Length: 586
Ligand SMILES: Nc1ncnc2c1ncn2[C@@H]1O[C@H](COP(=O)(O)OP(=O)(O)OP(=O)(O)O)[C@@H](O)[C@H]1O
Image (cartoon, rainbow, N blue to C red):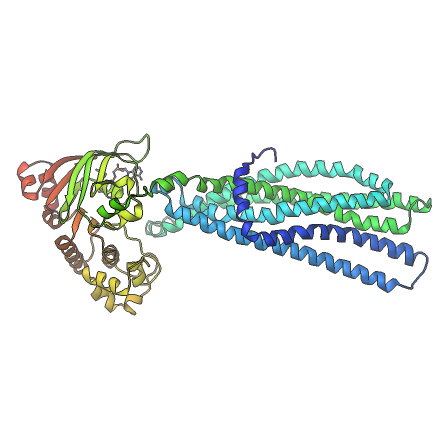
């Protein structure tokens, strides 16, 4: 344990989750003394049967002793079963609650977290790390407490019936402990190694499966497989090593138990012949031996399990430590009058906004200023990486540590809670994610206040209704594998309908650059025209027609607005924009 530092507040927070299930924990704990009592009662009864009945040849009452033995055995099993069941049940309940709480946090994490944390890591935190803690709680910590108490009680019992035999036993104890400790260290190293390789392998597996289309497209199956095999080989090696130490430990302890048994029988027989102890004492002693050695052996795995739990505590703590960021994206508590100002969209003003994704990274937006009024349509154009999407990401509050000022109806955006700001803006994304659910779900997303009629209306708004009606089941049509059973254009229309269904006043459009078939292309164009006619729009525009429909065009280069104006004005300037348009036309 000395290798692992224990963060008690973390452990305490974990144990707090057991409070609602304290009855089960208390039942489990209450059964520990029962188990201890039964463990002593059994060898004591055996001693009595031998010394009082068998050796003197008294058969009267033998049945009662035997019945007592059976009852104690049954009682012991029952106590063990209830102990395990109640503690496991409490642990499972607590883990269920913690898992839900952690997932809730993860769902609210800022994008920065996901930018730097591989998905596999978050998955591991929510699954195997929690399992390790739960396992350690039941099979590690509390079983160890019970076993230690039983061992001590048995040793006291043995010392009372024969201190000489107990002395022989105690001499063997340190040998077992030393061997166990030696192997345990190696076992733990091998185990840790296998966990590291396993999590790397799982991360790689997850990445390969999410990129399966690319893997297959470029016939990279063999390379991917051989790279995965390096992880499985590593895992196999580490696992084999830990199995080897585990079985070595098991066999050595078994061997020592047998040798001790021999020693005790030899020494005990001499004592019987010298009439210092009775036959019953020797048999009772032998019966108890196993009960002492097994916990000593299990102690190793219990300690390992507790160490795993502490490592897991450190990992899940990373999730709980994200707290401050979690709160910051939520903005502040606005006053009633401020909330009144946010009733409907009036203006959005960017004033010398600067932004970078990381503390030390390059500035991605440099003194960006513009004003978007109700009904205005702004187009953002510029080369790739110039910062267009970043502007939209600031508005969706995906990132919020900007410099300068962004005011929504005069209130600083960073102060407005994410959910509140979200009512104003909806994003028509270029990158579409569709769930394995019905079309209706994919448009409405079970959002509050959006019913079936809104879903149908949104689909009609973006001209997606015709193709949806033609699908088997219509709005109940189940999508598969991120919309694999739709065309790319249809998937885009569903995403458009999703953005419209929210009823936001400002639509942010990230226009797709990928080409779709001409029929869907026309539908998408019509949907965009519709939005341009009726909504306030801020669009990352790639189509010339979208750009020309805008009141104001902002031309971005390396995070700066280098030109601004209407299409006609910018064409007359014969600058960056005019060149861009020329490229689009050719
Ligand atoms: N999560 C991120 N972490 C760090 N840097 C990022 C991140 N996202 C984008 N960037 C960087 O910010 C810059 C602007 O990116 P942005 O996505 O805003 O460009 P864009 O103009 O929308 O490009 P495109 O037209 O290709 O979508 C780029 O240099 C990019 O590398």
